[in-house]
Structure formats: structure tokens, C-alpha cells
Image (cartoon, rainbow, N blue to C red; front, side):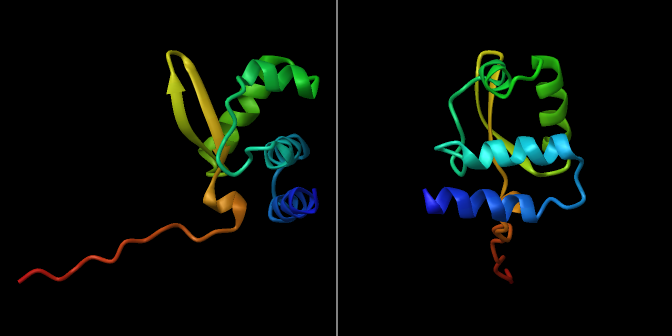
Length: 102
């Protein structure tokens, strides 16, 4: 439980420039059991759990994806699944060194 609490606090601490609803949604994703690897719950189910209208949830999630805080990691038909991005988790993006050819 302490790991989850620390993770939520770390994510919230990195989101000072976001609006309150965006921060709340990121904290919610961080608190999910599979926050780092993504969740298999639909946006509609997550919106209901948060007490938000699905359209509000979807709009805020879209803003966070565009800003680089959430990543889409899977899609099944028209259902998309998201997880916290490396940026949200405070990780550096993975960079692959290129070899010089020639």
C-alpha cells in the first residue's frame, strides 16, 4: 500500500501546472492496481467509479494524452486502454543509441 501512496504523491507532485481535474484523473490512474502497466477497465467504467460523466472523463483523458501524461497502450475494437506515460512516472524516455555506419 505504501508503494501506491508514494506513487500517487509523486505523480501529483509532478502535475503542478495542470488543472485540478487533470491532476485528479492522473492520481486516479496512479492509484489503480495496474497504474504503471495500464488498466483493462473501460473509460466508461472508470468515469462511473469517479462519479464523472463519460464525456467529461473522455475530454480530460484526451487532454492528458495530447500533453504526454497518458499513453494509449492497447485497443480492442473501438475501446482504447491507457496507462501513465514515462513522463507522468518521472522516467526519462528510452533513447536508443545509433551506431555510426561507414
